[in-house]
Image 1 (cartoon, rainbow, N blue to C red):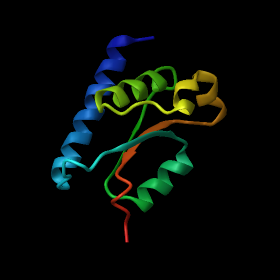
Image 2: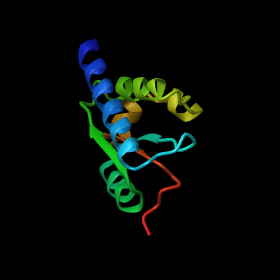
Image 3: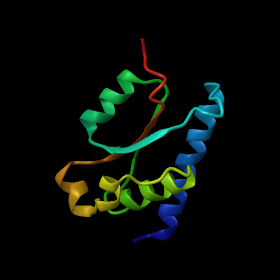
Image 4: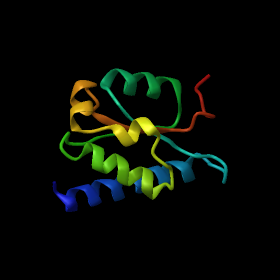
Length: 107
């Protein structure tokens, strides 16, 4: 596990989220919903919500980056997310971290 790569990818992604939030006028109660998703789900979410920020990470650090991003955003892991492991990621073909605001659906 490359801790430096995890830290850099986490910091870059959180920075991108903060820029998008500022650019799109997020208010104090606007939050990002962050998930690990497959290619199909990424396309669907980006079609249904704006802004939606996706990032592809190497599969060997994807889970650690996801957990670090959730922590940086003070967003607790769900029970399902706590149970995820590298085998879950491979079996479910999870390749992306994506963040979107559920209140900002495209019309």
